[in-house]
Amino acid sequence: MKNNVSGIILNVVEIFKSIQGEGANTGKAAVFVRLANCNMSCWFCDTDWSQSHKMTVMEVLEEVKKLSNPNAYPDNLLIWTGGEPTLQLTDEILELFQDYYNCIETNGTNPVPKRIEYISCSPKVSPAELKKNFTRVNEFRYPIKVGDRLPDISELPKADNYFVSPIFLGEEKKRFQQIDENIIYSINYIKDNPQWRLSLQLHKLLNIP
Image 1: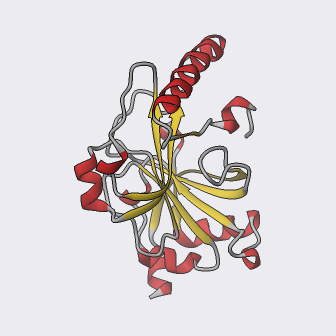
Image 2: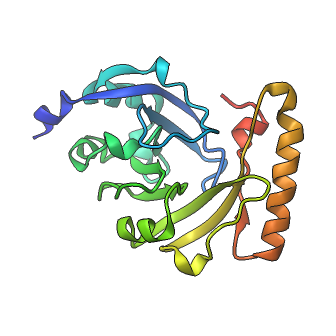
Image 3: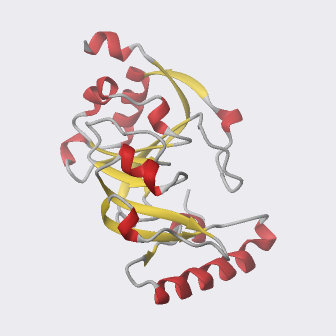
């Protein structure tokens, strides 16, 4: 089984070590595997798919090993992100990564593999669709801009954390004005809806690679 899986080809944008910049795991060291391809077309997406390249699962594993300490479980966060990682990631693939604490960042359009241990969902579908795909997630992180309204928490699957995440927009020269507008809107939204919490994209604010 493992030998067969190890030769599977993944379309990868990048693999890197950094800190998690948003959500409940903010500030924790993590290795990120950013997979290419997505089934949505979000206007605020900041991933450049033209830079993706083919890697075998074993090549991905070797690169992850170079960047992490697999003996540090459960503090060895391995975050599968994208794009939409559920388009490529399977339980068979994750069997090779069982020494890591496997997390996923997903848009909610598909169920996630059972071997995923932490689900961070940034929903791009309706609450009804989310309930088809999940019974529970670790966190919802809704991207939000001025004027956006979110579903009532009672409409969503159960979660440990419910975040709003102000969208960072535009060119560098315009970014901070737009950040301010969306952050202020998010803060006021949370004041009126205190079951939600604020999650800033710290890595972008601090320009952390």
